[in-house]
Length: 225
Image 1: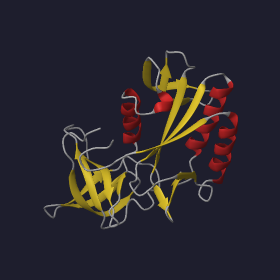
Image 2: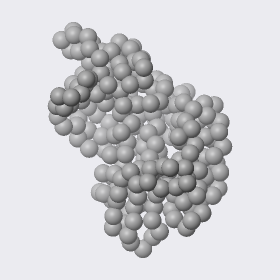
Image 3: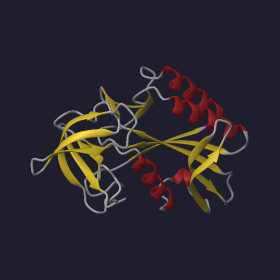
């Protein structure tokens, strides 16, 4: 997935109100940009980090710049725009890069399902296998050399695990994909020290037959693949 138009870089001043951040542009101008991330962004938003941002041509947007990547002082690239995780996995599935998810005729995004009023990120249908309900989670928390998900308590994430368990019980495939969008992470664990309930349901989901996949992205200011 290439960034078109190309990203520009700035220096982070601070992130605040979850969806906003102040940055210094390359010409020295200070401005506010949008942050498409509801998490804590621990380790991804240190003042002084390099911010790579995209630019929207939508004249109705109050903040035309969107924070896409963080380049840390340690040289790690992190995709902080969580919307990108679904797009990257969709492209990977369509290109046959995820071996566990090949053999389907149709891919549909954001399909309503379940008893808790959810939307599945990707629904794969058609072919010889049962339909696959694929939930994508962006893993960007690195602590002590270990990657974790989530980076904050996530009631929504807990709900998604319950929905996937129910999918498996109905005879379909329930698949949880950790899209690792941090170049310094080489393995992922459920963050029991942050959200003990999520970790508990995560273990229940695996026991129930929910498939857990971890795929790592190569990240640069030009593309994610």
